[in-house]
Length: 248
Image 1 (cartoon, helix red, strand yellow):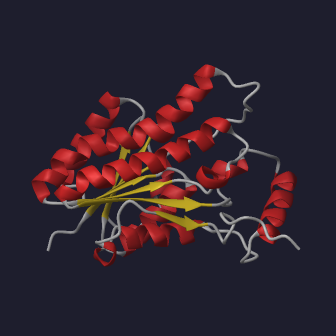
Image 2 (cartoon, one colour):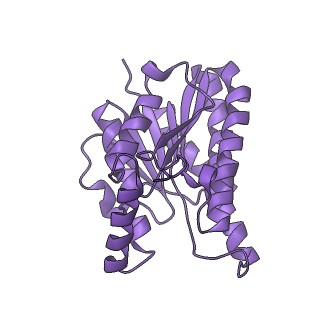
């Protein structure tokens, strides 16, 4: 039997490599897409890995990246839209260019990847899409463009699930809460980040932070045959922080 193939965007980051590890453990061949290539991020991965430099918000780049995967392995069974940006800003100081670039990566990117994988899914008779969202789509966050992009991703997912179901494609979102990754480490100095993480964990009903592996294992389930009838859903991997706070 031919091993399935997964595309993971944002492949050079901590979440991307965690997702790749889980999929490789399940027998996938994994194409890691990242704007600047994956470099040493792929060195610790065991299995068939293809690194592809791609800007997910640029259609020509996406078209070329999907074609590269198709030329190499002849199929795409799972698409994991993990690439994302979250530049700091507020509504009152928001720069329009920053807003547009955030949506370009976080929302247009997943749409373009799905668009250019459709011919492969039509040819092979199905596929899986999992996009990495955030709990902020529901409860709001501190950066308007990021929260808006993640809310938009849920809408895109539900439309795509309806449209692509006829091709045998499932489309879902995994929505984590705060995770200790390099993506989040850039937002504050280490001491401030430690304090935030402690307060966030204390506020979670489960009293703990989400780890990259928690997200990765949920992705691995959703792209597996065990989840073949789950589509159009948002799975919160948030230790309960997507819920209203407890009033004591």
